[in-house]
Image 1 (cartoon, helix red, strand yellow):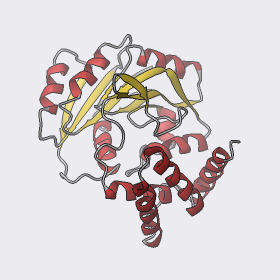
Image 2 (image 1 turned 180 degrees about the vertical axis):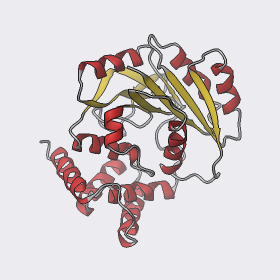
Image 3 (image 1 turned 30 degrees about the vertical axis):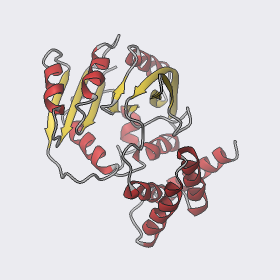
Image 4 (image 1 turned 90 degrees about the vertical axis):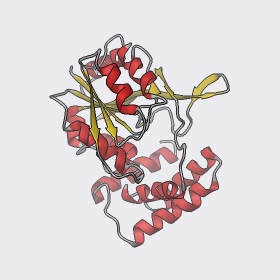
Length: 279
């Protein structure tokens, strides 16, 4: 079972060394790891290259892109650039450069995929540091596969059509995997350290893009309001609700292209409403 990993990285010199060493220290490392340096202005590329020299399964490449931060799209574009560098794979992973994996991460992932032939996506859970403790990052339920540490079976990745370019890519992929009949799984025993909490550095445009993503996933306005309210409650930031709703309505008025078709959207709404009512 050939596992290939892509890490999009932009100005990650503070985290990239610890991240890559957590891959090197794996009991069963991935077969291939590609770090895509996306237009960094710091030492990310050189630090990653130094580590890659001692490990022939690690490759570091550079991508030139615009400096503007485009939430969601930029990281997916960088991932897709790395995808073009890969050989054949059975399992493909998209990982962030600010995480530290437990040493048995890929050993466990191989076990999960080998034991369930319908498993389409799998991950551990993310933990952030508060005071001197590592605590679960409560931006999502523990059954949600988080974007910084997820693995896809090739059959699932191909069926969902790869990653969508925009905020919400790491939610719609999980929903589409289930739409196509694949299982999803999180392993609570695999506690991954997330060195930079989710949402760090978010601005108004980032909050609006959350609402736009809900529109693109065809949530419908009532369900989108509930989702935004939940985000606001978890973060204790009312701007997420206000500006997220603004982003949803702007996308609706301008008729922006959707992530999913009508039939997929109908499935997503039913799945989400069942979650709301606890069914």
